[in-house]
Length: 202
Image 1 (cartoon, helix red, strand yellow):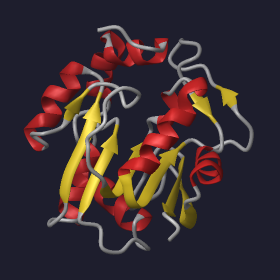
Image 2 (image 1 turned 90 degrees about the vertical axis):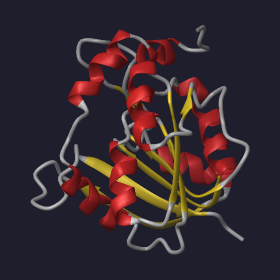
Image 3 (image 1 turned 135 degrees about the vertical axis):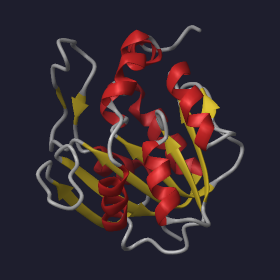
Image 4 (image 1 turned 90 degrees about the horizontal axis):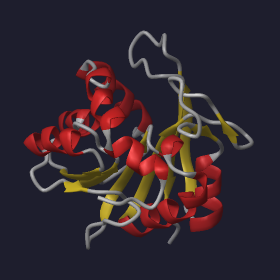
């Protein structure tokens, strides 16, 4: 399959497949994390995750929100195959060219925007906004100004910036809650990420 950016091809290929084994982690801390990040969210009965990988985040959300309908998209075929065991109708493809024809109470991006080609972030922001009926939760590395960070010996594969701020400026969503989660947090450790819960303005 041909992709628009080299970052998409990178994650669809061997590196993305190898990432699967590094991305298996305990469920309990992830459930605790989402309980914290979504404490101000109300009435979430459907979730769409951009870049769902093998479904770790959706599995945690299923435990936290047992009545919610879960959906997502994943670009890597091997990860998508595992994801479908938990989310049978999960989409295979890039968020830049594949989206469902419906909307969701919550759209989640966790550790995904950092790997998107910066020139195409606007399109991803627009798709996240269009898919969300109410909330968008972004969980990414934060930096006040854009910067590229070497990633496992690769260049142009990981970027930090104020993703949420750019999204709010572009979409009109408003900030509801945010926080930083340290990798040594005793209850809900994450990889030194900042989460931003944003809500659609009426």
